[in-house]
Image (cartoon, rainbow, N blue to C red):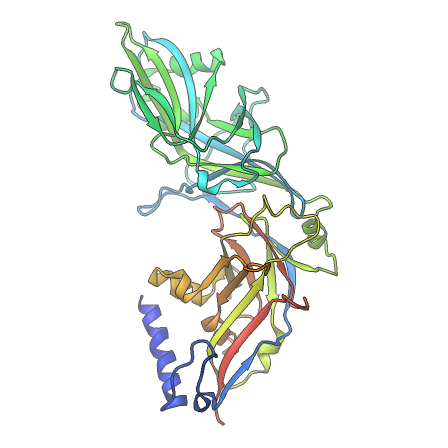
Length: 450
């Protein structure tokens, strides 16, 4: 908040110096004639764009007091996108006892069920897609003292422990809850339930010594975890919430006295998506391979693809105060696309490389985040078009362009789908040279010294 207040103070003082009796300029439109003195507008900058591969995507971080390290949704499936190519997303996770006590040595196991609550709002692509799920046991353990990125895939045992074909269910379901020792029928949000029939795994799980159940580190050393992958290719990615209070592996059993019980294993210290891509002959594949005639701007969620913008003409502006700078982008209708399934990202994030070479958000996004109001101070949200016009993204870059003019940041701007780790969506945009819907930087500024 301090950073935001300082920015407003400096900008306000600068405007007072220039305008004295005139109004501060927000949009460059609807101004009185006297307000136009010294105010310049330009939207004819040459904009160079090129597709660049995404950076390594952090999908699990070492927990802190403020964060569990888990992300809010985990994607799953093999999605073939006609523009972006093939995306293969697996889930790999530990399981640990919810309570550090053994379920019992003299129990009669009824069933073992994996419960994966859907994150229905985040399922991307064909909502009717069927998925062929294969579950394998991990052959190696996660380290508990390191971050995990999407390009890291742990080895799994070769045999498929369990499989299931499913389509996402968007409706609530009724289940029997045995947590109190009495069967109670409850209505629960949409979830995938996979019953394990692998007797060897079930026996090994229950047969672990009581001392191992009392120590979660020992537990994950005895049972490394699970890997969930899709064996079929479709046009969608499912999304699950592994942090839900309903998520986990459920053991349903009867005690020696015949009482029905359930025991829950939760997704443990670490859970991470593993993502591999095959661009093949897709449009994005050609662009990343150096295709010189890149007709569109292509963005893909997670670490899929970014676009690098440069605006050479900015260096010609000297001694100016930026009143407003907006990057306006129009969604492109690309031949061969299936836009009914592959809808645009809900928001686009603008970043730059700092003096350490790391990507950082532009100051306008930083300001907006500190106020909790992205729409007012940053924008970047997708707005659908009316009357057959393309959808639009309008990104406020006022502070960032001023920083470019001051030489505080480089000229290049990187565009990404947002949120970074938790968006499967992608976006196709028209480049600046499109005759009707070209990308534009709309700049309203005041020339000093006139």
